[in-house]
Length: 129
Image (cartoon, rainbow, N blue to C red; front, top):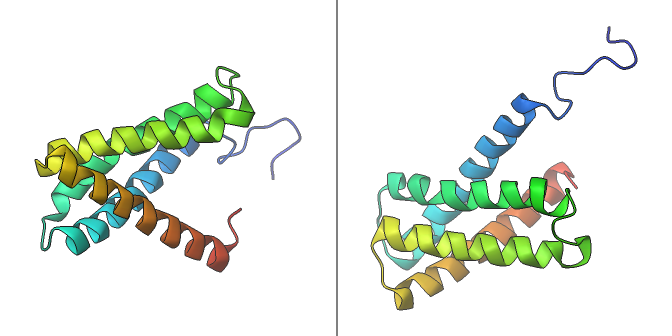
C-alpha cells in the first residue's frame, strides 16, 4: 500500500512518458499504414513505423514542454501542436514513402482523418478523455 506523498508507478515519471510515446507511435503507425494502404495500395508496414515516430515525438514534445511549460499559450497551444505535428508527419511521410509534395499532402490528410476517426471511436469505447 502506498502512503501519501509516495510516487506511484504511473505517476508521470520516465516510465509513463516512455509508455505514452510507444502507444502514440503505435497509434500513428497503425493509422498511417491504413491511410497509405488506402491511398497508395499495398505498402510495407515498416514504412509506416519509420514515419510515425516523427509526429509522435513532435506531438509529445510540444504537449509536454510547449503548452504545459507556458512556452505556447494554452489558447493557441492545440493549434500549434496540430499544425507542427502535421508538418512533421508530412516530412516523415515524404521521406519514408519517397513521395512528392503533391502526393504527400493527400496522404497526410488521410492520415489525419484515419487518426481522428479511430481516436474518436476508441475514446467512445474506452472513455479515455
